[in-house]
Length: 306
Image (tube, rainbow, N blue to C red; front, side, top):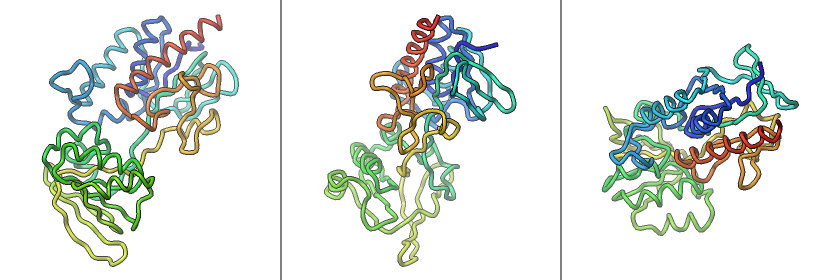
């Protein structure tokens, strides 16, 4: 049996696409992946998603959207896609050893924040450790924070956090930023921001919330501790596109390229939505909007084929 539509990935983009596609009668099959729900599954309070004036826990929000998609008839496989073949239609998708075919595909596998991989980081994620200042900065009003990184994203995070924090310390492993000159200068000139050069974090500590970090100067080997209320890791994101690498066009960073103003990829009938295409906004609401667009694009394309 050939499916009309297979959706790969189950974050806000994939689930929103599923809601729209199911209501349009496309009877979508979603391969949600073992890590279902996307990055919101490791987010505690979500206060900027419309419709929840008192905020909502990230996992609870994703569970509600998932139930909404299932209510309209979305079928969900809790597995990862192991291989795809977009060279001809119907498209072929393997889930483990099982092969599926589809007339159209929506890819919404998202992007994963790069982490430091140090002691305490995973345990305290959501309890003072974050990879998204826009998502979590509000919770740190009048607190002292650490930002790790030296690129434009780290500069943006640090500057954004000054709206709430009493002090922001940027910690960078080199002696100059990789960021654009103008962004770097804004950080260096900001009265609330201090920079610690040539230094890496070796541990994030705290019982139930972040209380501080351990630092090491990579030139001198000197170690120290710095008290802080939160750590924002801003060393980039990796789009989850390895399985599609030789099937559709990607940019130099691995993000899926889409035609401007659409969700169309380089393969007719294959669409992409959410953080897997977006390295600028990376918000749940923008991902959901792109998921809606992808479902509408797929629906219209399928109609044109029949």
